Length: 124
Image 1: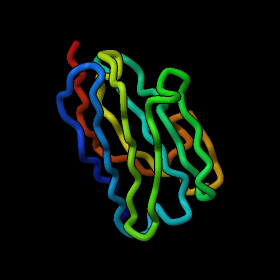
Image 2: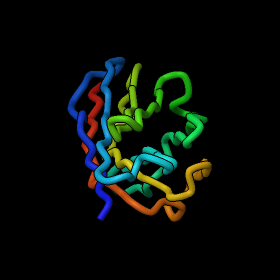
Image 3: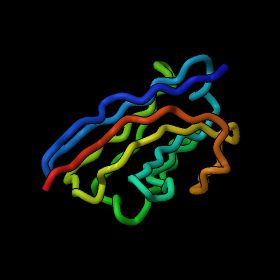
Image 4: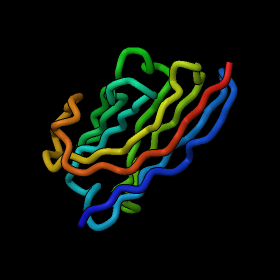
């Protein structure tokens, strides 16, 4: 059973930074495309960023230039560095893995494994 465990969330003031981590058990991160999604209360889960096995990345428009996704297969970990945070970034952030390592999917149905999420709260 593959597992993804997120950490690094918290409460931060607008303009601040957080670094989220996603630790993958087994071989989840190796050969898998890895992504971050987020879900605010009462809202649909939405794509944030993805990194494929060739380290190609893609971001939603509202986080470009502020967020950076990265990975290190040697330690089975994916990170999301979030800078210049805004109140609208407040959400539960989930890590996800797709068995299709080259995929750069933005839809939730493209991902095979999910973590339970970590709460990010940005105060104004």
